[in-house]
Image (cartoon, rainbow, N blue to C red):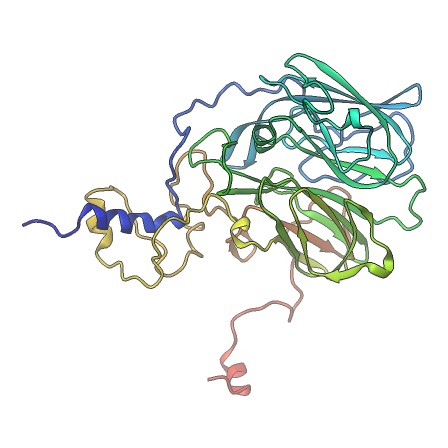
Length: 438
């Protein structure tokens, strides 16, 4: 008897699970891990400048500051553009390009009025430049290959030198074969502190670069040709649960600098547990009379936004992109919708063609990550993390702000313990009867 379960029906049904465990084109899935090894040390040691500084250094979670030294009154930095093997989070490692052994590059910090000199050494297989995004520089230092300068060829070292004439949160990236180099990870934050020290500096000052990538399932290299369909979303080049938590003690004033060099996407960064004030853009500080309060800030691509708030309520508070697929990774969307479908008997039929097949998604996808089902090598579809009350079903552009009554310097306090009466839990029968809930 001829089966009515045609190949067309199989493809429609089997593809429905792709929203949870996408198969993708497997471009590069058979690639060897490659030889992308940084030639600089990519140190994560805390940087201690040789001379005193009149500002509180920013903290760039999962990243470091770029070291500098004083030479005849000039701050001297050294950036090295090179291939880097990078882990987005446990389970996803890719061969990227970055600076000084890191993706993204280290944060550059200086002070308004500083004369700075930045050497850039190119250890990539192609030419590059560096553009100081938003920083006011002479035309010949602006870093647009072919227009403002000759490209830096492999093996060459160029010198950029200029005086800083502004303060705020800026960025740096190549302006030469941008689609390849930026989509492989070449970018970093550039923080310029005001010449006159702040009279009331924040207690915590964090800097976060937002970015997006296309990494095909099983591939070992981001796809720099992608134009619209990005599937990995990061804060400082890390995806949750690989993102470091932000820490704050109750009553402290917290500043968070957000930069966005995503290829195409804007991000709506939402913070739980506090309202914040938007105090600056990449154009500079916003006058107090023009500042406004939010609990989500829209960060268009190519811009920075700086927010401040007082950490008033202890707890574990999420900060994430509210574009929902940006809070998850490597999900497929070109598939059927299984919500509400009766899949009785489907597994048995499909397994004659695909051994081990399991229909998923008919009751929603909340349990998919927790089930820890096998996924293709080097992929993190629907990967979240185990929290204190079960599985956290978010990932991607997601981190946690941990506010505590007291903190031990440099120590993550673990999960928050709610006080009695401050935890949502199953309602008791007498409570339902008391309040007339049927």
